[in-house]
Image 1 (cartoon, rainbow, N blue to C red):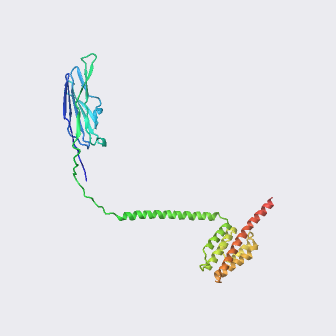
Image 2: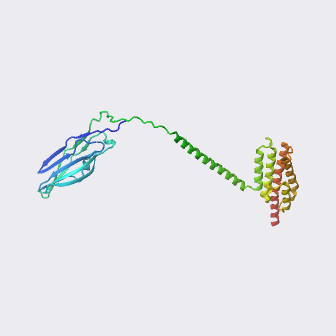
Image 3: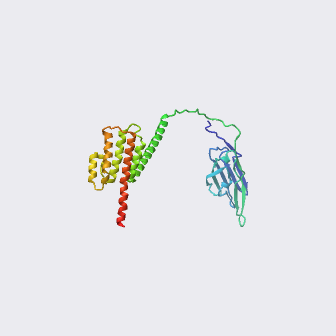
Amino acid sequence: MLLAIVREAFASGLSQELSEAGIKACFSVSTNEFSLAGIPIFLKVDLESTEVCTAAPPSDISPYLDGFKLESSFSEEIGTNGLVRSYHYKLIPIVSPEYSSVERTIYPIAISVLDSSFSPAKVKYIYSKPFVFAVENLDVEPVVTNSVEPVYVKYNHWITVKYVGYGMLIILCIAILFIAFRFLHYKHKLKKMTPRERALFELEQLISKHLVDKGCVKDFYIELTHVVRRYIERKYGIKAPERTTEEFIAEAIALDEFPKQYIPELKEFLASADMIKFAKREATKANAETATAAAKNYIEVDSALDLTDSIQQEGKDN
């Protein structure tokens, strides 16, 4: 595994000196090597002016840099006559794909010289030579400075168990919420039904169980009578499921709203069912079908009374 590859570079020269019209300029770099890891290079420019000619570097040397960025700079006066100043620049090599294998260059820097011996004063320029930094021998195979053996980490199976458990818990919660929603929807649907609709719905559910075919005749008759009794309770308010047949018939007779003409038939239906439930009288499939038809007929006929009463009431009102 390659941990570190350091490519070094060199500059074409460490220093340059220029002299013109009494102006002296010295350009120097701190090293002729640099690292792509971003180790800075320091550029120094010393300028010596005269009484009539004043030298100054550019206010910004960034345009003269290729592959470097200027991080900071400062200047200082050397001596006491104010004619010599030193300018210092800190340059950072740019590390990016486009500069990974090309030269870094400090282009010729223009030093302006203001000659006040003329009227008006004239400006001329002197230029340094370029500093070129080249990446050293890119074709050489990189040297591996260190290698690391692979480390095998034992897999913790409890992580799998934990997340599988979380997944199953989430699925269980979703299932419970779904079942609860279906149950509440079912209850709401039943609540909106009329006593007739609710009784016929329960009767269809009882028939779909095929209890007689399975030999559960007693259970069939118990549920069949409960369908009729719950219908009466919802419509007339008689607590039919909690009373014996005799108690229920007596309360029905005493209730003014209960239609008296159907009491004999209802009494016979309930008594026949009691004989099978409690006396264990044998019942055939035909008997069960007859009892089912009788229960359905009673519910339909009793419900039709409400429609007849409503029509008669409307006739009286008109």
